[in-house]
Amino acid sequence: MSDLAGAFAEAVLHLSFLLAALGVGVAGVMRGYSGFGTAILLAPILSTLWGPRAGVPVLLLMELVVSVQLLPRSFKEADRRMVLPIGLAAVLATPLGAGVLLYADGLALRRAIGALVLVFGLLLLSPWRYRGARPLPLNVLVGAVGGLLKGATGMSGPPIILYFLSGPEEARRHRANLILFFGLIAIVAVVPPLIGGLIDATALIRTAALLPLMVLCVRLGTRLFHVIPTVWYRRFAFGALVLAGSIALLA
Image (cartoon, rainbow, N blue to C red):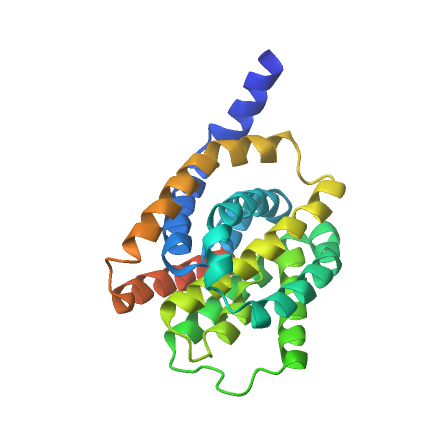
């Protein structure tokens, strides 16, 4: 019993955990509102606080639970003909990317995560969007890139989100497409860290402590989707991405 209490104190009773909880709250609202945001915002934050090998597994476990929560409804509303091939390519590529997480230098990986999130946030704030066709080979390529990033950094979002938002669909369809994709890839993304021994007692305790907050904030974000104008939300969310990426890159 004392060993369990000691493990809990080591995992949770730190300022870093409180900062992680703050990030989880913001990321949960983003995910519930827009269909994305969990991994892209939390990957740089948790990697800065705990290092990529300790932070990314917590992110992946929470992402799995959140995705299962949102998946049933989105499956009906999403464009399955486009999303499923992208998701399959990502699922197949994720274990390859996981080799980077397992063996890369932690500081270099953290800064790479920060740089990727920073560039992605700036792109979303800009008016640029991909406006070309979306044939099957390109869908598979984008999915594979997303899967490699998911395995290496815990976030597949940057290429996937930019690609999905390039389409003419309404906001509800965009959101459903993103939720379906992230749900598919979340299921397989936890396997390589589990096999590699990165999902240890500390990761499980942190996940269990943060998960109720994440679930609550996802539900809040889902309600806000019907209340807050998109333009207000986009400015806040993308500004948060730029800030999180900058911290991970420069800290």
